Image (cartoon, rainbow, N blue to C red; front, side, top):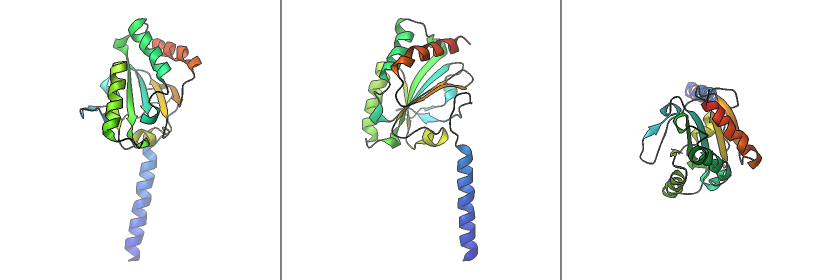
Length: 179
């Protein structure tokens, strides 16, 4: 009996240790660990689904889905109206943090579908809070991560992006697409 309890505790400690090694606190300057999420059609995507592109990754609690609309509107304008962001070298998309909300998945998919249409983008679903664990993303929030073509984090905002930073971030995206 003691041997069984010891084996169980040892196994739990090993598993906790292994889990701790896969989690990182994402920071500017580090390479972003990859992930796999699916869209509403269950098609899997990773960061490498868009090779050679600068990525704007919006990690969103559905309850906070409008929090960074001013920034996304600025990016959309720079991409579609001003044409200062080259669409061939940039991809912005959302990953919905389904675990951070009370909303049912059907409603989440409907909200995400409206955002996908508004911004002409891809929306992926994180049903198990994977990026909260893998990247140290906050729960109940809206985070924006900009990674360059080599998947190095170049900007990271957790929460609302100050509108005074919008032009600076758009310029960062423009500059990264030219590297």
